[in-house]
Length: 432
Ligand code: COI
Image 1 (tube, rainbow, N blue to C red):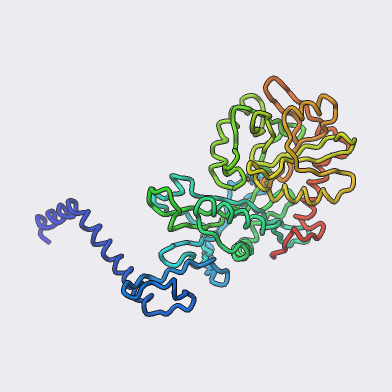
Image 2 (image 1 turned 90 degrees about the vertical axis):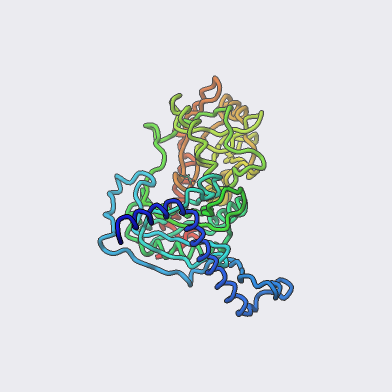
């Protein structure tokens, strides 16, 4: 092509890019038309006559799937050169390393909803800059773990509860819901494929992070028509740093709240976590590890860091009591929290209660020598004992670490015994 002609062609393309967009649009309209025609030909048995599109205006067959199905799972394994070396257990930290594969499930409303689940080599996501997840936090995540037991079998801990919570969070943000059992089966396959990444150690686990994001690239604050559910795996060890006594110090800052009535404190959405960073940094400057999140004029204890909070004290009847705030909308319904309540309720020497606990109550119990222990509980950390609480001008020394037979330790030992297969228990599901 003569130079002058090609120059003018480049100039034309530059000036007419908007028209090229239209060409692209037309071609996708053609695809749309093809879908419409296919839909018109197919006689879907599952569409009730009253719901069927009018005959004169054929529409694509939109039958949003209730869920993706594990039986449709497609697996593409990483080539040998794509496999990563496994880090030493001592180097793990939390969420710094990732395994060789990931799970992805797309949702396209226009194509009938959930697409086929796929397991593939771990890869970066390509996401439109206008995706709703990036602007309006239309997203959610979960955290569960795969444990390598003493018998070398791999177990998941109550994954059904994570699925339940995921669907509740999805509903709240207009994200598509799904059948939790199907996702557990897909995740199970993913863990089986990357099973050598489940640490051979009882101080470490494989953390599973299922995540659902709204990918539709439009600025309207509305339910996204496209979404991506993915799950990635990370071998992990301890989540929190502790003091030399193995416990954490926490700062109860009455000027910040994590959650409020009617909000999303009870849903595992990213927007509950990002905005805690400034308050946590302030607590760190004052020499504390975590924030004790309070709510209301009575300074009710809600959560600590990213964990549920538990208090052990001697009650008015002289009995040892394990208490945690009730699920009143401000509290994440933690899987560890629920398991502790259920397990400890069977111990005859302990009263277990879900009750509102205020800072005044903590101070009063401490003054009377009846405050025995405080600890945080969550999937990432399991149990984190607390030895000090800073609040206004109070410095509360909690004798958690000086108990002869601390409840926190008993709870932790019981959970770990189930998770690592020292005892067979219905909470732990063997998957490999
Ligand atoms: C958990 O313990 O399950 C958590 O959610 C902590 C995580 C946000 C790091």
